Length: 195
Image 1 (cartoon, rainbow, N blue to C red):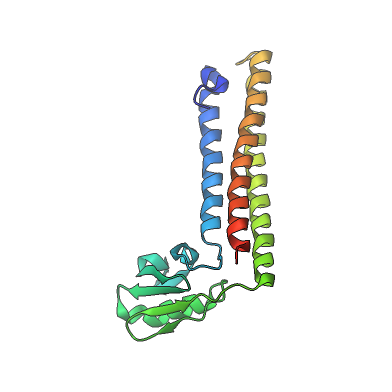
Image 2 (cartoon, rainbow, N blue to C red; image 1 turned 120 degrees about the horizontal axis):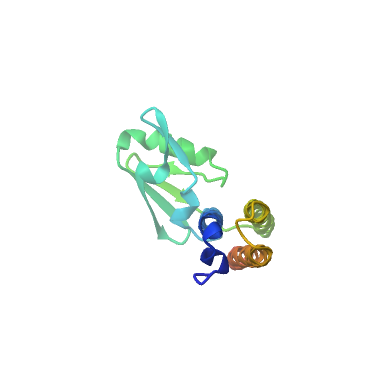
């Protein structure tokens, strides 16, 4: 897309850059959501969404302790400040992943039980919902872009041909970004369904 027709039209260059960066952010957000979804194996990214109440504020778990996965079915959190161990354990218990952490006074161990077939199907449904939400976000960005292009044409900043090309390019960009997310989702589904 570097040789974009829209980027070559001075009146649309900023519009194109803005839309491209917004779409990239939406895809990146989708990727972040995928990495925090639980599969059958332990992954440090499963805890990315967990917030711990520490020092009078909510902090991401990875800022209050070192998270690692020493075994495929175990996560370990080594707190930077041992006095936060109870708060870390509490945050993990209330997390939506349904963990049952145990602490020995120095570290918090989180066993990651294998997923049942039913749970795998629930996770795949959840993946589909996340994908649809992000598809909608990309389409909304496209709509905003189309509105800006049409306004530029109405204000006589660009020709009708430029408008037509820009709208077609916007649709292609939208299709490409959605396809990227669908491929990421398919790979994650395959990973989730793998026993």
